[in-house]
Length: 378
Ligand code: MRU
Image (cartoon, rainbow, N blue to C red; front, side, top):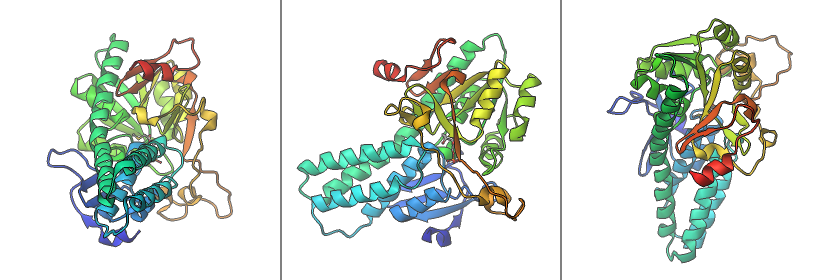
């Protein structure tokens, strides 16, 4: 990515003190290079959709909502700065071609394809009546900017609904301790976070005893990013190895698990960071409630179950070398590697799904959620 050379150090926070992975103003997009956290705070300039694609593929920006927004905005910046002499139809073709390219950057998070599909429809609708290219570009830019703004509001609503639900479900406890996996906070979204947003809301309501975060190997989103956010917000928290989850639960230290999602099938099966399924199995065994917190844009009603979810496989280097592939070799030369980035937790292991529109529940005896019914009535 050409943007690498343009990296500049800056505090990773807004004036209000919250962490910010996506810094956007019209014509300019800078992404916090999450590969360098927590030791270095470097923002990379993203000038166009090619930079956007590379930033997503190389994990400069990651987390399902964040990659969708970064993709949309990278193209917004490109067309804002474009010296374009074509017709409105030419503008529409250009946008659609670049959107198709952006969606190929990572396959599992449905937020990216959902955003691309919504933007594609908007472009096609706009070009029906637009007489100038700039009208089509402006409609695209406005819609991409709205995605950035809407995400924070959606995350705050997830936090509100989640905290309310957990408080009433665990009302025999004065405070609760929550385990989370991967990073679902401000860094993985436009701000505040999904599962980490619920933890933030629990904390601000005085109902959080402690948060536990897993390392989340091999890319260490937990130890590098979630731990960074928890320390930044002064939330009482403890980091554990992924392999310590069952022991921690057996010791009675966890009252609930809250994780995010990359794609939720119509029955509630949920793809999330590799290791989520292990955590869910452990929670089920120990009788601990297991929640998924995600925006409606993480739901894919076009697939009936998690079996249809395409799971991204990443480079062997992430396992063979330390620091998620960026450090020195730590595994034996010649060993073969299987490195899926996500796994699918079956709906039957999930207590409820927390969205910005409310909490989707099922009877304890039910295997699946009726997500379509929930959305229709929300
Ligand atoms: O590979 P990543 O870091 O993009 O994976 C991220 C996750 O699995 C998150 O839990 C998920 O995207 C939800 S982020 C709000």
